[in-house]
Amino acid sequence: MAFSNEQFRLDGKVAVVTGAGGRGNSIGRAYALGLANAGAAVVVADINGDGAQSVADEITALGCKAIAVRVDITNRESTAAMAASATEAFGGIDILVNNAALMVEIVGAPASQISTENFDRALRVNLHGALNCTQAVIASMAARGGGRIVNQLSAGAFPAQTVYGVTKLALLGLTTTLATELGSQNITVNAIAPGMTTSAAGLSLTPPDSPLVAYVQGRTPIHGMADPQELVGPLLLLVSEAGRWMTGQTLNVDGGWVMRS
Image (tube, rainbow, N blue to C red; front, side, top):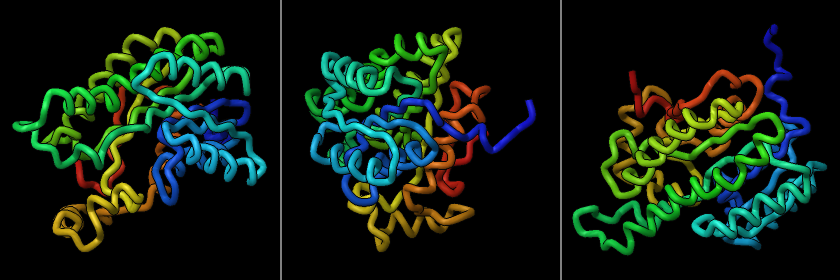
């Protein structure tokens, strides 16, 4: 089949994006808008129901399809309800973007001192949450002939030097495991590992004048900090027909901060 730009279109597809209710310039919002602009009907899912509704309203104002769903990804009943809402509204699920995560709350927590309770909470959200959402959508994807799952990792996992990095490295393992298990159902599972972005969460941790930004800027071949929009193109590759032969892969989208052979 000859390549065509139409292979990046998502017309007729249904996408669920968790953590998509962030206000302002958030990665989840950028993902939801990018998928909608490519033709997908989008389920904007977030524990912040008002934020999810705001992004869904923004999408429908553009003439695209979207609904908002409040979800607690650590709760399997809640993720099952999310999947049911998507199916009720749009007929099924083709794409899942596991974007919801704890970052600001845990990135500075030293592993040598973190309490069991806080470590378990980090894993419940950043690892178990992605698994809960994935398990909730598998049946619908399989019934529709396959699907695309994308997990949100982080450049901070390569190598993992924080509790946050540990959770994202664990998510990498889940990504390759699920890719192996679900391939026979024509479901691909890949990941995106962003570098530093100018999202509200990113800027709260690494403002432009921080020493870390200067360090990363000095060691990246391109620019060391980018707008969340820079992540939309890689996402569209992974969830569209253009990326159908990719599974178990991680795209490092970070200006060259992490280079892996």
